[in-house]
Image (cartoon, rainbow, N blue to C red; front, top):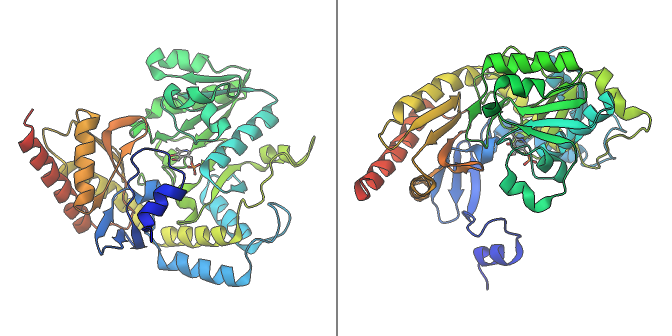
Length: 403
Ligand SMILES: Cc1ncc(COP(=O)(O)O)c(C=O)c1O
């Protein structure tokens, strides 16, 4: 009989030659449990998904209850489905007033696709501006606005009229590249896969202003940084700006696949005419996923202290991870990156941390930095324990290769 691991390599499409291939039997809170009995602390939340913890009991209950009522009923947007309506209503109630229309998707990339299409329809323009080292997903539209040539060049030609800008060209040049031809600027409020990179408040405010002047829509991708991760419910709250379109996914579904792009009614209306059915999905906003998302958001809003504490917990990690091998720990709240000298050192540390029961990884476009983004429910004691493991691993590796 082949083992599960052998069948995994045989029948599951692989995306790297070296998948982690951990065999996990169950997950609860901040912990994953291997089928060999090993317990792992998840410091990456399945990449920014499990903000309210793995198998949050309120989310699981909502999934159970909804699955006993109905699963898929009809393609998106036709029937009035309570879980969709309740989640959209709750989301709108915690967002700026103008963001009052929610389109649910299955994933982050689909939210990005929908948002870009919406911007083109509403403005009647085609040019899309994005940023160096941005990650917005892996579908071809999302790839077109990815800020990393290495990952996208194999798929060219991609969407025309997409411009990638870099702040190294100077803020003034970036802003003046946005013109009356630009349909939208798409930007992660805080860049995730770039290795947790923040833009300045001044730049983000100037960007919004320039978009307003040119009639360009500002799309904020908060797929990775929303839902309390940075110490605010939404990361844009740190910067005094509001998007024209907001993209969400990952932790939106509380562990179930769910994305959304959210815009003012007036903009979202563009999909309903000339021609209608401007964006279509069969499964987007699946009732079970929306029920899970609703439970997750209610949990987070009730346990608001988790959002506030994310900032203190992030500061604690910055204090605890102090070693000459660590060049910097950067980020906001529990969206952090610890930088080492190079990929080899980072990978060695990450591999050994996983062996010792602490799961971290590196970033797509920043492989010398370690991701630290645990579920928000992690306690300070658990963070101390996790950082203790990381520090011991760093010390043992530094001892082996002092240079
Ligand atoms: C900022 C950001 N945008 C978009 C995506 C794409 O989301 P998905 O993998 O659900 O398509 C990701 C995924 O990592 C992301 O981090």
